[in-house]
Length: 236
Image (tube, rainbow, N blue to C red; front, side):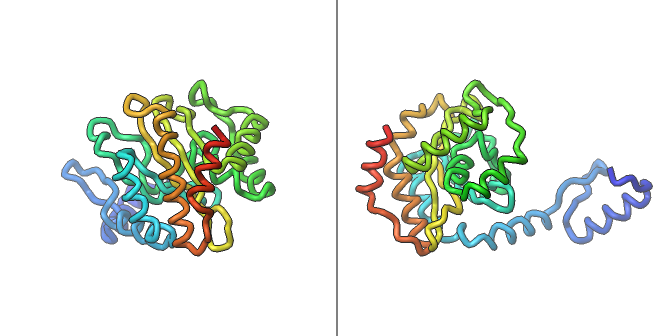
């Protein structure tokens, strides 16, 4: 891919190996090394949101029994910066992983963050999107997505009804910083054979309370849980 001679490529690999960014296997091939893991941990550790959110996310996972995610807008991408796996996924793992970008229009966390962005910023991000139909429930029309984002903005939470992976259900809620701006989203996720979307939605009070607690850690004064409950009732 670099277009260099094989001997040059070998020297580059040897340099990367000395820094532990790659590792040579017994078969003579190269794989990613521990240096990249350390680098990714440093990058994730520099995200101020992860540390104050950690205990709240783990408490939410214990209470619901489902996988919990934390996603943040980083540059032009929405990235998973933390994940607490459910023990129920010992046999079947979700495709998500920390450090991976998530679809901004076919995920609950992506739509949550999009819904609260200033219109100019949202339009800029969506201008680079090529709408692809992953499943029968994927939003592939800009106007339909905008209507969904307006609904999310009004009710304060989002769902993913198998929009990227047909078997994955998810609900998400916004996390705000000290200025009240939505900078991230927390979510509860399950495969459909373990929990339907309606079953996940029954955990919305806990999810909204958790998102409010994380927002409070970041300096935001969230509404009371009672207000959050009234929002749920009004939206459903």
